[in-house]
Image (cartoon, rainbow, N blue to C red):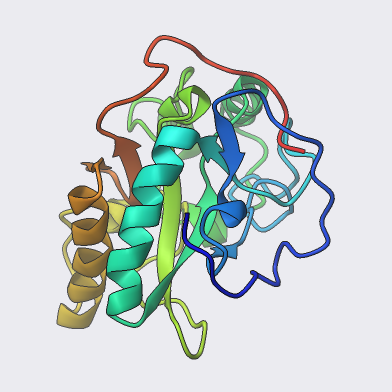
Length: 219
């Protein structure tokens, strides 16, 4: 386990404990930054999501081990990992599904899906009834400069529901493509696969619970 300076973003936040096989990512990568988007309101729904009781990021032990390897590769290049989400309770997935079906709630449309009609979210695979996150087999993250803690420019924000977020996207600058490649390469070399629709989303190549969708809260 990598031991470095404690991450101030989660210092002092109480932790209630987890089922066997799951861990808090900041306890494995202590120089990472945790920005738990679904605990707060800065997300595509605009409110806290069911199942997120603390601003923490949880993942399976196997995913954490792979993330530790990726963190080492990125650290050598002057970067730190910034996690948005990993394990996601099934009740959170259900919350997203209900929200997507409510086409009257478009409060975050200008920020997260300005060019997409909300009714098309399911067809476009932006929202699903089941998620690899709930199996503990997926992580959402970006990288920041180790000195400034500023996020690298990836060409879109997290959870930007648009073709611009695809792995292969038109209109990106050379710098934006290079930044995505830095993250993608580290994750692939560490045991993850990409998700073609989201540059921030990575799936564990060898999932420990491929058939199980967990629903314990993040707390």
